[in-house]
Length: 158
Image (cartoon, rainbow, N blue to C red; front, side):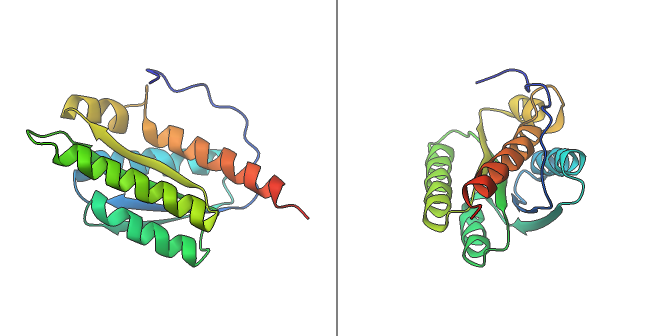
C-alpha cells in the first residue's frame, strides 16, 4: 500500500452525481474521510453534486449503497467507514463482509462503488489516513470516483 497520495492529475469531469455513505461509528475519522473526499470532488469537479447519507456503522453501509444503486441516484457511490482492530476477529469479519457486499452491489447494478471502509490496526493509522493530508484515503477515493465515472461515461456513449 502506498505511503503517499499520487499527485493530483487533471481530471476533466462533466456534471456528475456522487453519493457518500458514511458510518457514524469512529465518527472523527470517518468525518475526516468525508471532508477530504468532498473537498477533492469540489476542486476537481465543481459543478457536480455530492450527497451524504449517514448510517450507524460499517455493517449498515451496503444496504444504503444498494438502495442508491438500485434507484440510479448516483454516477458513483463512495462508502466511507473506519473499522479498528480489537482483541477479537470481529473487525476482520466485518471488513470482509462489507467489502464483499460492496463489490457485489457494484457489479450487480453497474454503478461504481468506491470502497473507503478502512480496516486499521490502531488510531494512529486512522489519524494518518483519515485526518492528515499526506496519505488521506478520502482524497484518493474522490479521485478514483471521478476517474471511474469518466471511464463509465465513455463506455456508455452511444
